[in-house]
Image (cartoon, rainbow, N blue to C red):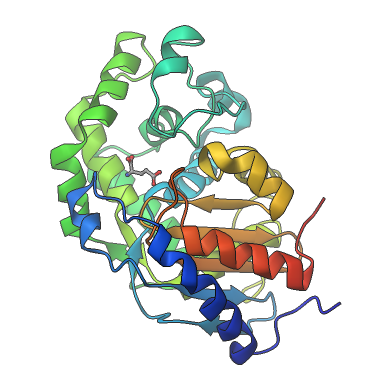
Length: 311
Ligand code: GLU
């Protein structure tokens, strides 16, 4: 069995097959600006450690990271504070609940969200990004994203950030709940400003695959030879991607596809195939759990064809 996808033509065939299911999905519209996405888009890039990249679909198209950013903010905060401190404030257990659920905060741990991939946990993580001002904290995160992607032009989409900022009532409630329980001690509007900009960081699937390969290679940027993320932190991030990266479909995803991956409501998926390659996908039509419907289909095909599962 082949372990590598050799050409864009080969990848394009899989994209065409996966694309058929975009009609069964729905683009996210609870953030109004995301509702403008084209339901039938599907693009993918696979980045190998030696710098080669194969891609298919409209790969230049940009999208916002949304929840994919949670892995990157987690890595930064772990580098800022160390795992021991971070895991005093956010847990390590999957919830099996939707990403924006408040229920386990109330019934299990009011001041410590169960993991950093659900919104409550991600908000606590963003709260921990070091810096004197919101602007400084955002610029640190953005610089880290640019370093991982090796792309200095990456920015955030103001339209999507302000659209989410204006309508993030549920995220505000999570923040106020956490503030009541001393898990957050900053101004909530400021934190929402930072969080919505973080989620609105924009790139294409080539950039996302490039970030994926850094995680896949244990935090080493093979172009520069630099250890951009410490090995233990890259390992922690990949483990969260396996246990809770694909919302409350993470178990099924681990069985059917079997790689560390993180998805976002914009339709992005970042995959990190350990020791092999990074995958960036954009397909905005979502299934009922909030994952890119064609993205999942495509990963199923890739996993079957190239034996991706690590299990
Ligand atoms: N900005 C989104 C939110 O917090 C991210 C959610 C996601 O992609 O899962 O609602």
